[in-house]
Image 1 (cartoon, helix red, strand yellow):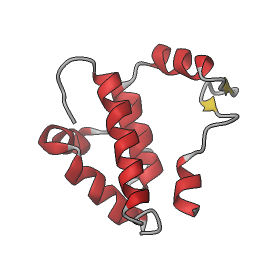
Image 2 (cartoon, rainbow, N blue to C red):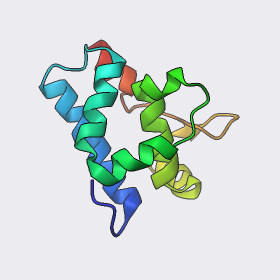
Image 3 (cartoon, one colour):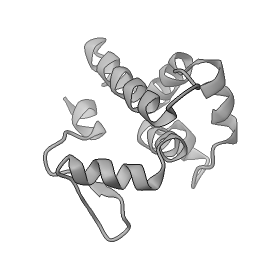
Image 4 (cartoon, rainbow, N blue to C red):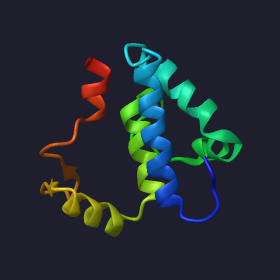
Length: 113
């Protein structure tokens, strides 16, 4: 992932490519620990270095791919941009202001397919 320029756009591209890779390589059925390791290898040295400083609710969350993606998303995509993008994509928000998709598959969809 490039850490210069528009980090929100770069993160969205990187995340989409990573999810696509997991699906194409049939790695979406692997344990979360392996998916997190693959993500950290692919994100590059800067992204890997940031991982140590990321705040997770629990130590176990550091090895849950959904939590890792969420924490990186929170770091790279400003809250206002996430809400604007979600609204523009036909996504509503719940009481905690987290996007709730009505039509877009979630990470869990890819994992379970």
